Image 1: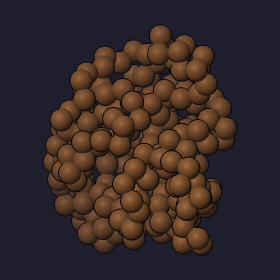
Image 2 (image 1 turned 45 degrees about the horizontal axis):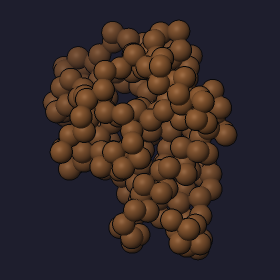
Image 3 (image 1 turned 135 degrees about the vertical axis):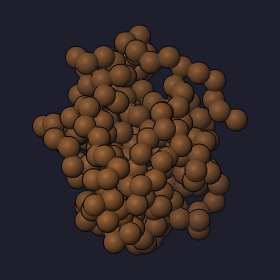
Length: 220
């Protein structure tokens, strides 16, 4: 991995640069408002990868990890992408470095949740390589495709926001409401769910004892 450190470097990027990169290279085409921090992978002066953390749209996702009293210790790996010009194992190296940087930039965070979309051909292989905990799959959920922006809209978009930027539990945009906006309803199949426990060895050990999730074998 020392070879990667000599060939690539990681630095923070602004939200505007991250949004532009996601629109150009990531299938989601957009990012949540609360995205922070954003890390870029550079080769020479070229931005060739991006790792973005953010508060999840659903507050329930955060409360489910350690319990409702510790929701603020949880964030989400919101967007992750690397261009195909890199060799194998760069993705896991980049993500591992970003998780360490997150510990410095947001020391209150002890867990990072992430979702892997089988529809995009993703099973979470990178997460498995970094020993993330697998805790099953999400439920099927209605989303909306916005043809004007090219973005996939979550059914909670438009609901009441909490102070941390997530949406209040219970609100879901109705199918007809999305159609009235000019969006195309799309039922999304369940995603794989993972969680990383971060911090030093002691902090990870404590976090593991506080975990409320049930782990399962990795999907193959």
